[in-house]
Image (tube, rainbow over all chains, first blue to last red; front, side, top):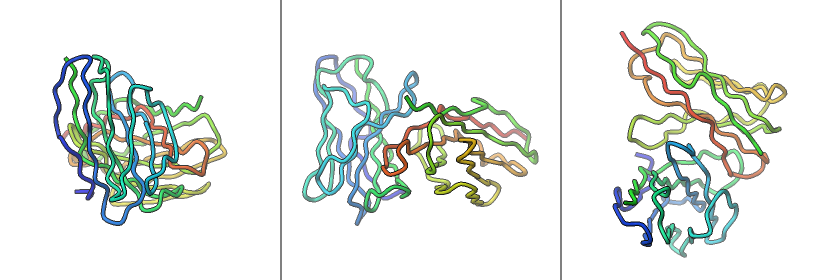
Amino acid sequence: DSGVTQTPKHLITATGQRVTLRCSPRSGDLSVYWYQQSLDQGLQFLIQYYNGEERAKGNILERFSAQQFPDLHSELNLSSLELGDSALYFCASSTSGGSGETQYFGPGTRLLVL
Amino acid sequence: ELKVEQNPLFLSMQEGKNYTIYCNYSTTSDRLYWYRQDPGKSLESLFVLLSNGAVKQEGRLMASLDTKARLSTLHITAAVHDLSATYFCAVDPLGNTDKLIFGTGTRLQVFP
């Protein structure tokens, strides 16, 4: 158990809908990352937040957005969902977000868009 | 665009044998990470390599980094069934961020 929690574990929804994925980092960690894992795209970095501020952005679609709240939990919002958004979404956290730190991954949220 | 390539993609090996997984990347970086993923599970950090020539070992796994060759290796010694998993390497392309670019993964199966 990494100490990173994610809810829900599974999510089934329809195309065009909007969902919110939630992540609580390890106690004391200030940085949160979101990744998407799918069969065709592999593991892709989406976005990073540090202490409430966006720090780095990857291949995140405009339909997706994220934020980190004052209590450091983070939410990933996916809207206008498409079949291709079906994937495993991981949240990870690290202490201060500095280069070379270990990122600890949560159990993931499996999203299925029908 | 940064590319991180692993080979082999699939590896079936007998218990007790040794083997090496290779991770090649296409840009200069001295930050290389190895993760393990069991089927349907999350990613577990194995090693963080932070400089040229870095070598780290944990149990039957040893990782090394050659930044000049843009190559990292994960060596498996005397494999056991519990090592069966998918192994990913990841690179920080700028060397100063946490924006990890992951390789394709190597699926390892160890049989008796």
